[in-house]
Image (tube, rainbow, N blue to C red; front, side, top):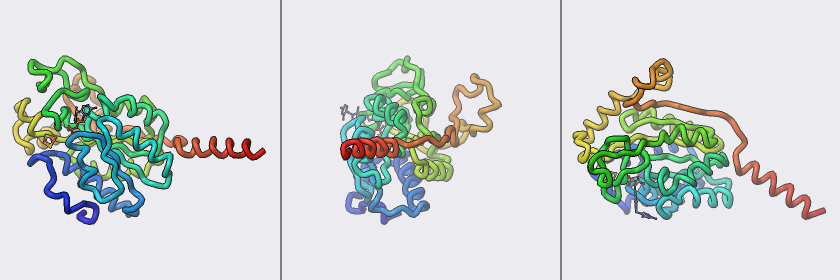
Length: 270
Ligand SMILES: Cc1ncc(C[n+]2csc(CCOP(=O)(O)OP(=O)(O)O)c2C)c(N)n1
Ligand code: SF4
């Protein structure tokens, strides 16, 4: 994977045991498997621990402002439709401040693959609750337990119009890699939620043990899409449903946009 990394920026800033490196490794293996030209890939991120990925990746990269990765990525994709555009971001970045960009990118079905590293917390700013922090969990901003219910971000983007939606965890790393590869191949808006451990701010505060204990938790609480179909909602309450959740073929935004541009040109030439 070294050819995809900017070695001069090592060592990275991530804490020992953090899930960010596992998700990044899965993304790079998926890209390697697809054999894509390294010079035709652009990775865009906002701000957060996971968003630091763009600093380490040797593609064209944009490290933008908190929550705005998809806005920048949308502009980039429209200006340079031949590029493969990938967004990497945290659950805070993509679901809180960037939540509106997320649903509209999904609604447009723009050809961008978004990988949400869901560590259920704001890691970089020391553990505030995010829209994906489960009810009752502790956070800097929820010292007596989070009262908010979390989003199911996969259901949200599916309802908003995403054409590929999947979820896996840092324990199921091979599956995660396969799902990212599928997402990259889908033409349209693709979304992969990678449930990942932040052993420092989420794990420690919630007494979840070490990074390895958190990985074991994912192993023990993950259920496949197929198994989940025969389970009751109360049985699924503390489970993580993993696998491909949704895949349909719909026209992508760039093709629709190009069609309208062509029509506008034709009328102007008349
Ligand atoms: C406009 C703006 N608001 C707030 C911040 C502070 N900030 C930086 S990163 C971050 C949250 C990061 O959490 P998440 O997106 O979940 O990523 P993680 O660090 O957990 O990977 C916040 C609130 C900022 N940089 N810019
Ligand atoms: S604070 Fe959490 S998310 Fe950020 S690098 Fe450390 S372990 Fe990873």
